[in-house]
View 1 (cartoon, rainbow, N blue to C red):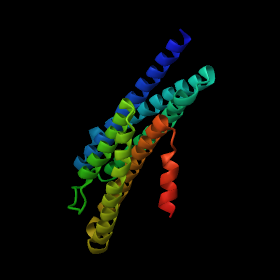
View 2 (view 1 turned 45 degrees about the horizontal axis):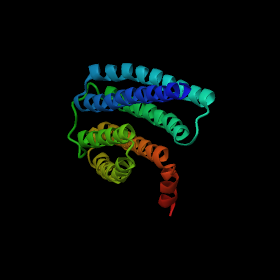
View 3 (view 1 turned 180 degrees about the horizontal axis):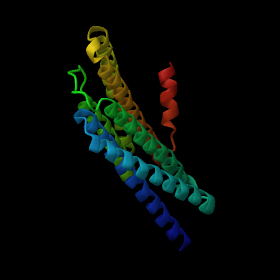
Length: 224
């Protein structure tokens, strides 16, 4: 019976984390829509959603730490709980990045969007796809899906580099839209960082399934 109860608690922990992931995904999608359409109502929605994310973040952490303290899990169950704690942190930071996009939107709320050489919508969709795929890997316990997410990170890094370069040229050539271009640069960085958090989630799924710290391996490879 104690073992069955523990497995139910693990299932509850996973469900709470998935609810947290849904909030983070909604925050990203709504923030990008708000920025593209200068929508104050969506900005307010993301603000309210951020409060829910912070509450969920605390609840998941509390349950995870209680399980560590009370059940003293071993092997794969221990790795799962540790992965949940790290994934929970990345999801909370996705909410923070979404709020940063909202602040950029509010700063420009009364300005007609300028024609800038960047596709924020496509970058947002790509980052969102990475989040959904990393959570799919978690739900299905599929390390191959998680590996595919990690490989996707190079593309959004490329998108961000191109955007930074193109928008910097706009600032140099079109002073009338400098503020909008600067805000777009920040939004692109936010989206690239959101994709980094999705990559971290994928790495933690692999850690849970295989016991391999691939995040550390990636850091070493990038340093070479």
